[in-house]
Image 1 (spheres, rainbow, N blue to C red):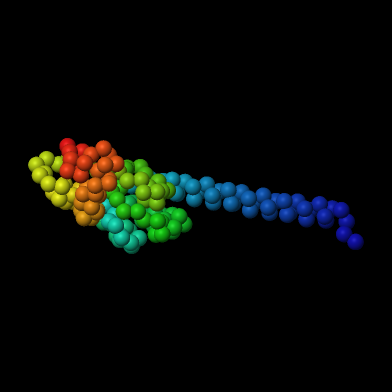
Image 2 (image 1 turned 180 degrees about the vertical axis):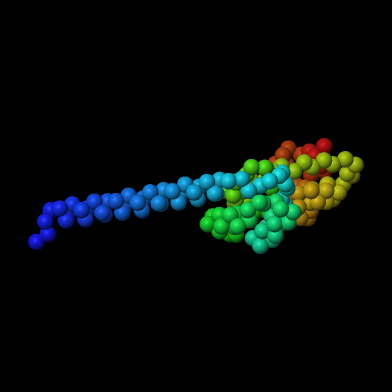
Length: 168
């Protein structure tokens, strides 16, 4: 028959083992958190993701010119967050000090940086659609379709012939 000292020592051993496992898990979690929040962007860079781009194309773009210091960390975190399924086209600004979590979050959410479009000496709606298509990496035909849509013009308080005046 086991005596009460053996039961006590088994409980102590189990509690100590559980404490060690919890402590090891806590330390591993803190190390992972520190690694994920460590800066991986050395300098300000612009990254353009075109419509229909793949995850591999994004990785190639980030590798080019050393835009990311720690590609392994970025790829691990991107894999965990399933970035490959949610890439959104656009213009993104990498800022010094950004972590893998911040960069992946920016690409996943589509948090693009603004594009300044200026136009002078454009004479026609077609010219404007072409300029917008160039600067915004979009199909100029889509812009032209919106700009020549009479219903869209009326929605903004214009007649179709006056619609171009909205852009002046």
